[in-house]
Length: 112
Length: 114
Image (tube, rainbow over all chains, first blue to last red; front, side):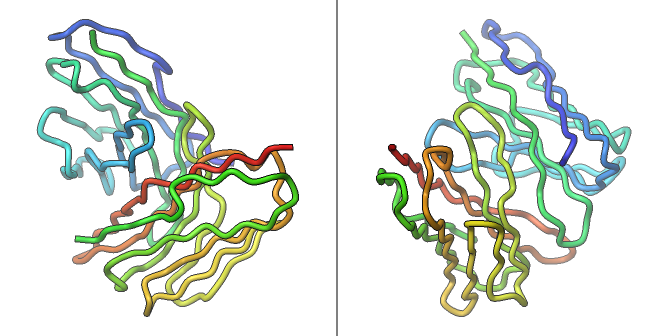
């Protein structure tokens, strides 16, 4: 069973606040991903990383940043939260090569 | 750009029925295809991974097939149970230059009623 953890599980914050969503995995996976998912919609890739000090932008990256200082940790930061950021954020990792993705349970963010 | 479509969008069936969920993709140059299950408010749980060189994979009551040339995958659920109620998503893995980016469909929302 995959061990990938996201915190917080739920978050309600006001507009303009800076927030960081945490994602950690204990499997030593090189590849990590952040996705945004609205109810009933497909997952949209925000950022991904293929290893330490490697980060790439996905389709929805313009309003957020990530860092990969350690293999196990891949935090996502919103510099100034807006109501349009209200969504579920999912973190995933994979071992490398063509191995499957493993997902965390997600962070449900509400921006008021 | 890869596009992934899942049909039907929603399905409601009585317990015991055999089900077929469909996933189609526009670019056949894929590495893998993965089927996931998602329960409400949760993350995704991997069900089956089919590599591009394979035709199908089986796990218990689940069987997934892949036809790259036609850009299709099918997830077959045998003898459905209420516990199978969830959203089922497929993800197609493609990329170039060493990248490996999965693209997801919107999913099929399944309800199995007793």
